Image (cartoon, rainbow, N blue to C red; front, top):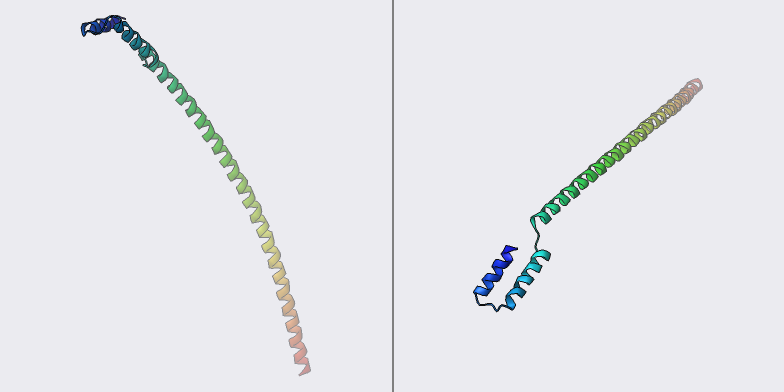
Length: 122
């Protein structure tokens, strides 16, 4: 508070009326207490900001881990679907191969039958 007395003395020395100097000192003291931050205020703010950043970092890490787990489960599910589709495709290919073999064999038998019938007639 010695700075307030020094301020008062400085105001009086430059011919500020004695009634006005305390009002200036009081206004300045009020502004300093309400408007300006002290070192402890700044330190408290720094600690609060550090705590907030740490909480945010932990929350982001948890979100990333959850996202990674979700992506991994989606990839595993897609792998299962792809395997099922491969099996289904192989079965369809086997069925198509069998069907084509039967058709080709049938066409060969009919063609040979027609050929032998044509040879008997001639």
